[in-house]
Image (tube, rainbow, N blue to C red; front, side, top):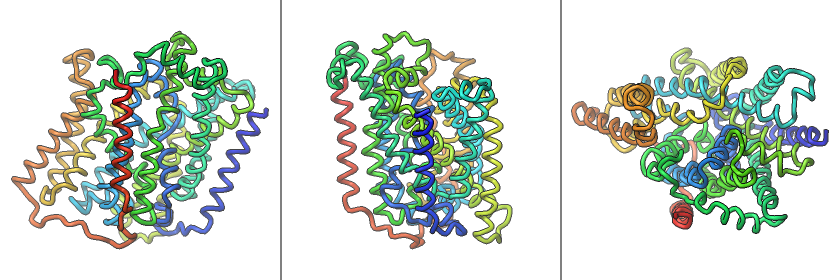
Length: 529
């Protein structure tokens, strides 16, 4: 009962603070609703970025991978720090110069309207079909299990799951649809602090459990018992072969942190470029600490349970249940609930933005006022949320989705990333090249991963999907450049400065970025065997 009260107390506190922080924001305009009035500061941007990124499938899934493979899976976290630095130095200045609300808006300016629409629809399809139902399902499983909802309410596991799905869905929708980006960002920032504290408590109590009450003794025990599991380079048969960090891994990270609407929208809402860059750099530095929350607990669980768990996905929840003091369970559940909520409402808010700006205003009602765009964006958001809540309980075997999530996302992530990179680095590649890049890139990826891999070459003889992504990225880019050479634009593209915010950069952005990159490289060298 104490756990439930602490859970409700922390959750209500976040809601109250978010309400008072956003009540004066004008949400009748596109900037006010979709970008928090372009008023977000560094701390809010960093907190929102980090919590948007974290959810149950990542906390549970990555620790499960660490339980299985050891330290090498930290690449998903440490490489993110480098991608965020690249975004801060190279991409964000261009986004804010063009006064963008969505990433596809740049593609309209660079190529044409149909390229923007195709990209927006691809983003929306990925969010609706994969992300929203998976986030709802996985989060509901975690909350239902942590509080033992079936016993508490006297209902079946299935009914308890539906109750949790609708609870998360309704609360997340209120934040995202009716509060706009600023409500999402402020609530994310508060929950990010809780997640850092709660997330760090798990490895601390875990190390104390295996170190006779001493954290450093526990770390010594862990490193001496299985030193080979502390190898940053890993082995070929593992989930993240070391070679992939030089190929597709970096492309996936750059797409995710630099062009994915649900993530970059936080930085697009910055009050100026300097504040946006500081927020990204802060998030980048904290990302280096990510393995303490997302990798170390899985490695502790491997030692604590002698590698005897039935499933690697049970590593994190079992460790939490075994080492976390009972009075802290409610607080940790509230923090986890915040992470689930954040991922759900961030994807939903981005979907509303993409629909309102890139679909409704562009194709349905071109003369619509900003108030009308926001209104129909909200209606779309409610419809989307309801659809996700109905679909989520139907995911019978959600665990299998998590392991293939990155692979499935490659269908649209690499083609979109390719046309954005070529669009920024060239001035004469035409719109037809972008369309061919999107459709041909998606087709080749589907062909390679879901036809050739299982049915022609076999799973064991086929290159890792991250290597395939790199190959297709280069292929796509070359095709676009050839088309640009044969059929160039008549007028070279120039990005105009809309003067919506100051684009004076943070004067230490490059030195700080290089310092963070040096730390990442040092970590890899230090732990390389």
